[in-house]
Amino acid sequence: MLQRATTVSEPGGWWEALRRDFLPADRRRDIDGLRGVAVLLVVLFHVGWIRGGFIGVDVFIVISGYFMGRSALLQSPFRPVHFMCRRLYRLLPALLCMIVAVCAAMMWWVLPSDRADIALNGAYALVYLSNLWAAGHVGYFEGQSIAYPFLHTWSLSLEMQFYTIIFFMALFLPYVRHRGWAIVGIFALSFAFSVTAHLRGDVQAYYSIFDRMWQFSLGTMIWLLPKIRLPSIAANLASAVACAAIILAGLFYSLRFACPSSMSIVPCLATAVLIALPQTWVSRTGLSVLSPLGVMSYSVYLWHWPCIVLANYLLVFSVHGWVMAGVLVLALVASFISYVCVERNGLAYEGRVAMSVRVRGALCLVGASGLVALGLSIVSAVSRVH
Image (cartoon, rainbow, N blue to C red; front, side, top):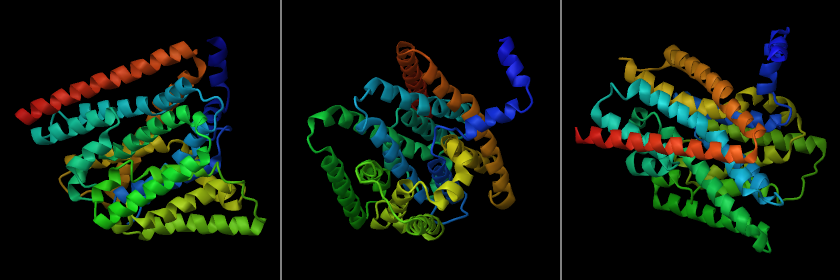
């Protein structure tokens, strides 16, 4: 204890702690920067400042597919318990804290009909089925979406469903002779499913894992391709074009280009190109500037939408301009606290304890989430009756 106190009191100690948290040496800063671009696009879209920021979710999904492909499909041997514990400690504590805090802050004063929907959405989010709830209740791009502080958790549910799928794939892939072709087949089948949904006009397919698996698979397929070796000028040009494609799509895409749509492949391919070319100037310098934001992107994603919804509930006037900017500052503060106090501590605990303790902790997290989900379901049912 004495040694720790001395270390903290040293000049620059707090700065070094922040540097370790926001500029970790064991991560690719270009991909963290890409995460920063993605969450920035989503946030700016949700506040109404850009048209196509919804493609930030597409960018996130490709990145997730890339890392999960390495963590599950390319690990030999695959360690299923380690894989699932890592995912649960990474995602569940911050989500649970956000939902409990938001429910405590707003559910006791909203109308019973709103309380019923908010509580049920929170319950679905905690069991990672929020995308199914959203598909049956509200269109993501419709005006009433501003009434639901947990609507954005649909993408987190989608991600956990992908983790579950890739978990079972990793278990059975050793018995598959051509695993690369299996991934390519999933990509082709899901992309065809997505295009078909688009032609049918099925806008609720936006929430569907079947229409998104090709995006996850695209990220995983990066590992299957031979390492790209281009001349420096060509590599930098390809990275610059890919980065420009993501930014321009975020600025100018209209809602009709949202997944399911063949046009959603543009930002996804651009993301894959940037991941595959880590040594370019765009990756090492341009994207790395946003890496601190990317490191805490999960917490930013969790908190920005509830803050926007709460502001629209509480204020009697339309929230925009400088008021919205103030809301985003508050959301950033909440995100910082969530990342430093919850997200980082959860991962640090998972990394330092023995496996048996790690598993018990994961089971406790799942149990706590289940109990809160059950409580929210009861609140929803009672509110709907009254």
